[in-house]
Length: 180
Image (cartoon, rainbow, N blue to C red):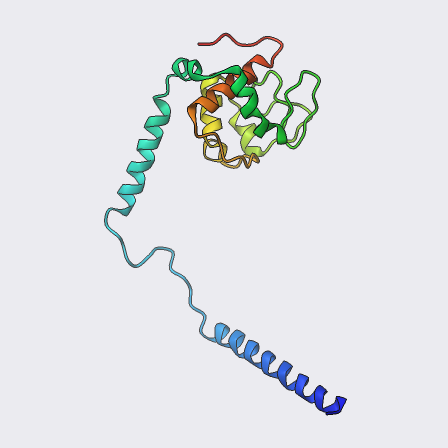
């Protein structure tokens, strides 16, 4: 087989592929279907189930007694768990910002207030003080607590881990806040 025959075979394959793609695109344009904004089929009870489960989660989060939670914590355990955070955050008095801001004296500081760090708009808009309660809510699942935050960390599910990290972060301050 000479090169002219190979060229004809390759050209035939390319032409076939282009024809198939072209016919598909033309058919999509010809038979364009707009998707409806609402589903035509309503499933009874689906909305109430998701609403009630969300309300239950919100109620369980609100009922946390921060004094009891912090009593579960341990400073040494907090230092160990904080190693997950140290991939993005430094916690030193003269520390620099990394991927995340320096967390020195974070408890009692306003959210989004480190001058030389570029926070997400959501964090700046949040603008609450990092109290023990607020830090606990945030550490459960950062993306759910402040929608739009840049922090991609999944969160700390275990109460002991959260309590220990909060105690550790409070200890890393020029003036640690008194425990509730």
